[in-house]
Image (cartoon, rainbow, N blue to C red; front, side):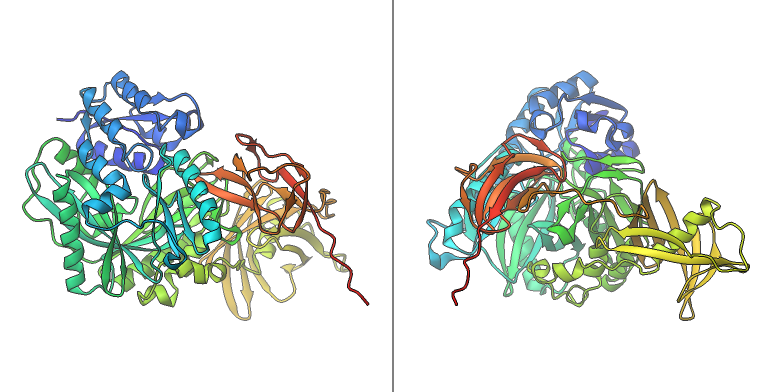
Length: 625
């Protein structure tokens, strides 16, 4: 019987496991890096043990330190969560060798499926040999790990060598294993998976299907259960293949078998020998606690002969601190407020926490359940639209628009959804009246309306920048004996935190929240983030033409081979690779020309806006007369 459990992970999944442990009466132990010293999962645990350092390679990926922490804290079991060491057979053995209970499958099952190449062999899938032009497009994929890291689509043979190198580097950094392989890239398919739960007594449950088709950069964004629109015989085939994977590996605990479904056929992708990020949708539909079942199986208990029946539909959206309009660039800073009403919210953050550069940018998972798919989708979209998310830029608006897109509502989506629609879905749509609401609330809060005058004076003026699109706005309003007035609107009420306006006969309420110069103006249709600007614009900082600036804070992981000052570069050529929040980002030459300065070096930590390099564009040849 487990009495104290250590979670060898951080953030949202650690908090999620702790929640079940509290319900079961199990004491909890957290591990934390220096960057996570004040993190929510540390505050929620009964006991916490420091792992000195901040980078994953010196903290959460150090299995020896985690086992030592478990023993020091008196834990008798270890749950790996997902990511980091969750699919590391050596770590599972180290936990067991230390006399601790491992909340996961046998190390042999992890070994069998942790390498995607070995998994395909076990499932009878032939690997792709030497790649030729006829094989394109292909997918370069890390043999270990998941989450879309170490994965590249190659459509041109000239790109293959570079993408292989990039995938190896990213995989080695994320998983400690740089092995990659190449497989055919099937376009126009759907990503469908089957949740497994197996015990040590021969029982294997298949807990329905999940659809995880909506992905950006090969990382899931929206998931649901059951996968809509699949023929019964195809579902039966998916379940049969999942059970085969469990039987061939003598599996125990929770696992997921993933497929690409195209043309009515299922193509095996991989088996994840761990709990999935999207497990809450299965929990909602089947009425189970998968973490509690993991613990029961690890304690030796038998599952019921059959799983509970599925009921209704559940949809999950991952809320990321990222800017979809800027290439999904991760964002950092203070999360002032996070509240998503009416749905399940799994998160590793709370109000006032700092979002740093070291880990995944996911803030939370919002999960809606309803009797039907249409109702669940509507419920989740509405909850996200009404959510309060104050702090760095997030993908919240993109999630709402994705959930309401006709391809998604009609279940006609495929894995190219964001390739086709990301630009439109990420387009900024700030409320045009938000700057006026912010200015009126600010003036009321500062008691700056003053007395009215019979003789009209100059109107009051404030300037704001909308963070969604960078546009600057000048707001003008007057104050009369009847209160403030502004052109084109009727101002009904004003307080320091709320404004009500009437526009073309329609009344709208605005909630105004200030955090220094940052202002969030919220309505029932969403949130507009503003930054208050000085009345007189400040001179712009001067940079040399062709300056390449860091788009986000992070670490320089490599520069282009042979790159040095004086080198000739071509427009679009990748010059510097940054790693931030477990994702790799390329900084490319803005034009063809000469590299006149190079400030980036592998291992260097940079802040957003840091100068990485300068490219002097080549002079265009003059046209002959």
